[in-house]
Every structure is written in structure tokens, then in C-alpha cells.
Length: 423
Image (cartoon, rainbow, N blue to C red; front, side):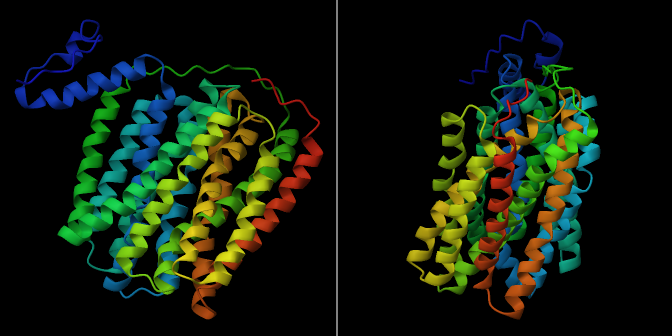
């Protein structure tokens, strides 16, 4: 017998939860459950769900890039372009979308965001040539432009003082989606083809947009206004080095995300095994941000970043030297653990310098700058791979990581003695 979820909000909001149509019970019960969770103040859970959906959708292209490369006869530069242009579309509006996150209720932002993500994904499945595919991917990118300023600003504001911990959990939710995309999409693509999969993902995301919108109408974000008084000049001066480091980290992340399966295929693994092994690598790597959230409470963010990027640089050189289908995936595991765990410390360093009342706006502007810088590097890496060899990909990552370490160490020496700002 069918037993609906009995939400404690049903008596409080009977007009919203009253079931009038039998076939709508499943949808309304899902809304009741999520609304109950959000009502209890678990803002990080809401941010995590949104981050999971967003990262799942925007990672679809890397997950099927080898199939797209074969179907549309793409070279390495085209492959990098397919990642670069939609990423630019995702990051350029983030100053505006971050401002919206400070002024507009999150329920409206999530509705627009997920609708665009779903619509663009469905159109990708209907694309008949590379240009149509690129335009569809740009629509997905536009939807993604709303996500990160929103989730990072509401998490940093609501959990001020413990933002490293909760940013780690929210970050991990997005990372969980990565292995799922590669494993699930690869398996389903073999069964029904990539076009059907894109259509199904798109329609599912559109359905989720309605559920999340209805369930989040009563979310209240706690913001401590006035806790940070700093001049614009001093704010920019204090943020410039962390933003440059964040841009370099983004560049490394986008490069290895775009070309890891291609590199594994280059050294002798089949397309299927390259995707499955990458999914396993990502599954193991999720422990990185989770452990960061458990172990760290705050402070010392740039020192942690410097240490992790030093190790990434060393391991990237080792990947280039190995070129072994057995050894290379083993070396890639710690690289991905570190590249995923480096986000919370750098975001925490940035958030501790931001005024609470403009958290979304400043996050958006910061992400626009750093992700714009990072988004061009897959294309640059593709040109280098076409000109020389794909082995140069990880040498490029190593070189960028060394630059990030040098800047992070300088920042640490300059600000290590300062007391973190009170939020």
C-alpha cells in the first residue's frame, strides 16, 4: 500500500501540501521532505544539492568527450574549445548573478539556474553538428553561472567562523557528482547512446528545478551585516594574490578534467576503461574535501594551498615520466585528491576578507576573474598537445602549480601574523 511521507509542515502549510491529484503524490512528498530539511536550517544541504546537480551537468561533456571526438571528428584544439567557450559563458555573468544572490531569494535563482541546465542538456542530445553542440553547451554554461556565487555566498554567510568546514562539505557534494557522471554515463551510453542520455538528463533536471523551487520557498539565510569594515583599496590589495592563486588552481583543474581520459586513452587504455578508471579515481578523490572539512576549522588557508600545489606539481611531472597504463592511474589518485581538497582553503581565505552584506557580489566578481583566466587554459593546452605531444599536458600543470606555490608562500609570509577578520 502506498504510504505518503508525513511532513510536520503539512499542518502549517496545508494549502501547499494538500494532495489533489493522485499522480502528483510522489512529487509533493518529495517537496515535503526537502522543505522539512531546509526548514530545520540545513542550508549547507540545500547548497550541496544544487552543487551536485550543477557539477553533474557541466561535467557531461568531459564524460563523453571521447565519443564526441569520434562522432564530430574533433582535434585536441576543438576539444579544448568545447570546454573553453561554455566555461566563459558560465563565468562572465557571475558578478551579476552574485549580486542577485545578495538581493533575490535563492528559490528564484535555483529555478532559473536548473531550468537552463536542463534545457541546454536536452538540446545537446539533439545536436547534429559541432556548432549546434557548442551552442547547447553555452546554454548549460549560462545556467551554471548562477550556481557558485550563490552556494558559496550563502554558505560563507550562514556559517561565518566555520565556513571552511561547511564549504568543504558543499564542495564535496559537487565532487561526488564527478565519478557518477563518468561511470553512469559511460554505462548508459553503451546501452542506449549518448543522445538519449542527454535528453533524459535534461528532462530530469527540469523536473528537479520545480521540486527544488517549491521546497526552498521558506529558506532563510542568516547574514551578519557590518562585521567587516575595510576600504576598497585594502580589500583589493588583500584579495589580489588569493585570486591569482585561485585562477591558477582553476586552470590546472580544467586542464586535467578535460584531458585525463584522453591521456589514459593515449597511453594504451580503451575508451571504456579510460572512463571507468577515471570514475574510480574520482570516487577515491572525494575523501579529499571531506577530510579537509573534518580536520580544518579555519586559518592557514594559503599555507595549505602552497603545500598541496607543491605535491601536485611533483606528481604531474611523475605522470609525464611514467606513461604507463598501470602506474599512471595510481599517480593520478593523489593528484585528484589534492586538486579537489584545495578549493575550501582558498575559498575560506577569500571569504574572510569579504564584507557580509556584499558576499555574493564579491564572490561573483572573484569567480568571474579567476574562472575566466582558468577557462582559456584547456584551449591553450589543446594547442600545445596538437603542436608537440599530449605528454606536455601534465608538464603544463606542473609549471602552473609551481607559480601558484610561489605566490601562496609570499602571501603566507605577508599575512600569517595577522588575526583573521571577525565575521
